[in-house]
Length: 265
Ligand SMILES: C[S@@+](CC[C@H](N)C(=O)[O-])C[C@H]1O[C@@H](n2cnc3c(N)ncnc32)[C@H](O)[C@@H]1O
Image 1 (tube, protein in one colour):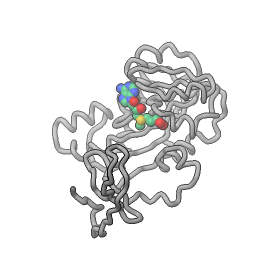
Image 2 (cartoon, rainbow, N blue to C red):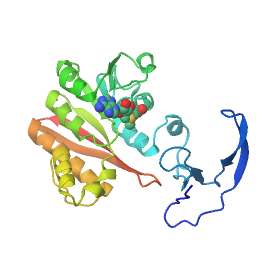
Image 3 (cartoon, rainbow, N blue to C red):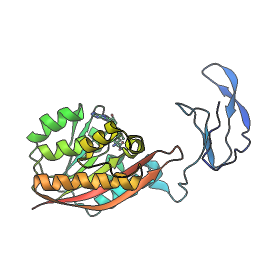
Image 4 (tube, protein in one colour):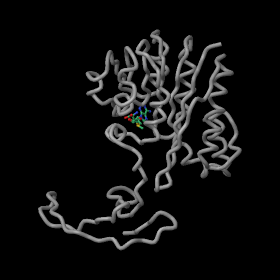
């Protein structure tokens, strides 16, 4: 069991305590990390002790929402001032944390798309239509049939949102102002891709621009902005980034949250 710590940290002595484990009916030694640290209990980093992210400034609603505070704040800011006269399209709706915490009362209807949508959402949201299928299938087959006015599309995948962004704009004609909320976790791969030909090609194919920088979130944001600018040129739109936030975890994982205002010209 390794005790991988945040770089620059001296490992504190980790006390153990005994606790009853109902799965085997016996007592087991349980790792009890000191305050301010937490132990990874599953996955590749099982047993590693990591410093807790500092979420001390985050209170109540944000924690309950089950969302990262950066994501919560960025989405809340983007949705501010929205009235309930349009439809919100939730791409990668999943568990519905964003739908519940941010968008619930900001639309007269919701379209929820994911391989698996939380079944409770149908009753919790006003006029919710659920598409439980692959994103490709929805974007290519269902989206072109939608005539409702979409006022916001939330694109919240694992990894890169670029394929969904491109297919969305190819299949939805923007006739009214539209807000686009994006989560982009591709920065986690950017550094790996930097020097390989394959990596460069991946970035070009995904973001329609060159991998001219490092694996930083700043570079990732540049690629995302470039992609949105390409969408603006291709579909005759005005697209402006209105906000962004960046999440870092002690594991080194990073994600960008960005909001765009799209207007037809
Ligand atoms: C970050 S989670 C979404 C979280 C959700 N927006 C929320 O607020 O609770 C990403 C979701 O993408 C879905 N997903 C991943 N690949 C997909 C695909 N090809 N088609 C449809 N859904 C997909 C997963 O099922 C997962 O629920």
